[in-house]
Image (cartoon, rainbow over all chains, first blue to last red; front, side, top):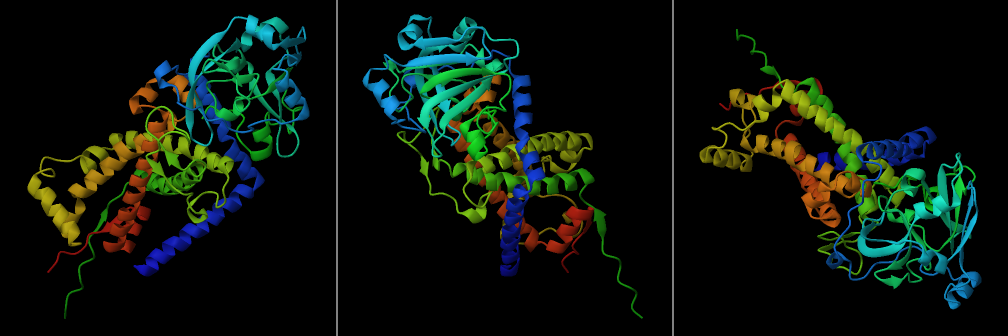
Length: 248
Length: 238
């Protein structure tokens, strides 16, 4: 019995290190990482293009909405904008667009809003429900006019990460034109706090938290993700190996 | 002169479908359990309801699981997720294929379905009593599964494994949009995460008892049966 148990434990230990060694093999790693393509294909096939994420009632909102990632960009530039109540902040929209835009916070406030009480799902496993208000991304993109070769939107942020590069994320046009995809400036009826991404953050409600870029400064329309960061479409995708498609 | 002893009574026990699925499952469930613990380590707290984060009430708060039981052996949420999300669809479709195949070849109806005699209280008690005394069926009686065996295989195939698949899907924000009924079925994403965890440990408990039973009831014979399909009926007690 004891011998069998020991053999089992040894077997477990051996296969564990075996798995770890396998995951270091490039071709196996590629196969392992390609599961993302299956999930993206399966989910996009199962859901209608505009299928909505669940919207909740006001009494279902989390008492405290946990902020995650950068708590404060803390750069000289960001602090100056914050002191000025973001009056001098601008959102640039450029890249593969017909008309480049530079939008102030008050211009964004003047556009039609959408309000949604949705669940924020962190890749770590926790969830928080909050009420977001913002401008549908579609409104901005219609204003800028995407060129026919635009395939993705890259979101550039004001917060710098461990290696000194700024945070960035990207989505494709299916999510960009989704009715719940908004540029949010308010959470739970108050202007976005610094910890939650003031003055503006992205909401892509059918994907995980790391896609919800905070501290937006620029939206760039691109035809390929190859030219952005390491080419995988986002800071965590490039630096930690997270999936670009974060629907699961 | 003594006549030669009769050949041991060898029967065909496990069909090819059962053997293939069993070993594929052994591998996949091992990957899924250990990578699942790696994912759990990113936030080792469990909640009930739709939401749950650090400020909310957790019904279970654990330390991180140690590296010898997680995949990979060091903390990497990204890699654990790659392992888990690559193995999960194969596991789910294999279960579906096995259920369909085993309905087709009548394995489920013939060998797993509980008969009226199986569920007679006297038989149930007898089976529990026999298991407690480690008296396993011999001879002709060993051809068929007893109540506890049938009940655990049915519980695993039709309850625990589907529950793991559907609670897993419920944690996906994309699947929530595709199939909103999943959220209502389990009462929220965090409830689904809790049920996923409980079902995984129920399955781990099944695994331990399963291994124990194999070791106690003739491990070589059982192993051969699951590899080649051929099982030697244990001789009747004198």
